[in-house]
Length: 362
Image 1 (tube, rainbow, N blue to C red):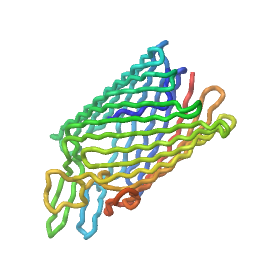
Image 2: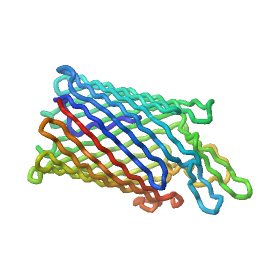
Image 3: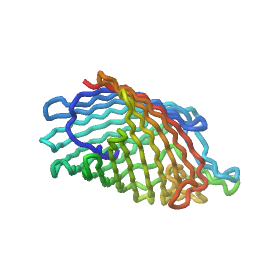
Image 4: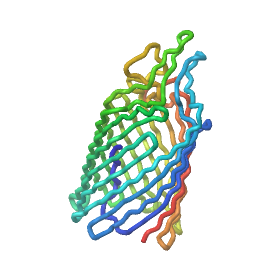
């Protein structure tokens, strides 16, 4: 699990708040659907301490992509014939100790499924400088994953990941700030997907290649953010850019822009638009004429471009309670990659999501 970039604003939590959210995600063509209720609470528990805790259970159902085959002369990404239904439980807790304007935080999270377990510990610190015009942030985390597979009782592999983070936030004016974050991730262990394989037909019998990936993965991500409030419009502009590259040969770019418009009586609307693209992993291929030590046809490792759009409607009441409703769509195509060729054999992909939330402050 990687470190999350800190928010563009810093400071001790001034009031307690709690809330619940309901998230629903559905892929096109009758594939995977996810339902995820979540509850959280955050606030000050003492004069110099903050707490942030959350719990979530998501239920996944449908059919996942199991194998890739060229038996009919064309590349086909076939779905699992069996209907899948499984649940994942996740808990997270973070304590932050404030020393004036500076802070030190310790975080823990646990994610569990019937065939997967991941536990993460994280430490971060923040420093305010130059009359709070500059915020410096540093962090480190370590996680350990245990991987199994249904139908393979002897499979019990492990993976460990360490992440290192550094960021700076600069106030440009009373209404604008800019932030830059750099994260480096170093992972070792089992990365194969035990449920996926590739069948390459060159004759009557296929060559079968099981999903096999390198045992190390090192990556670096640079994130740049800009935020500006426009008093005349009572609105805010947010723009993000992210560049990522890793030792598997994957290179990706992300551009994200959103507009937060406030209205009378506590209403607000936030439309957003995002573009993402990536290049293929060095060991990705749609088919394999012969067995190789490292190879995968997982569509997530191919080259493609994607657009997503969303909108969030929020209402804040006089008693401090608020409700929100978000909806969005995602669409992916190999031909939508702007800075290089896409993996032409990848199927088009679509999904949509809906999220509703309620929050109270006290």
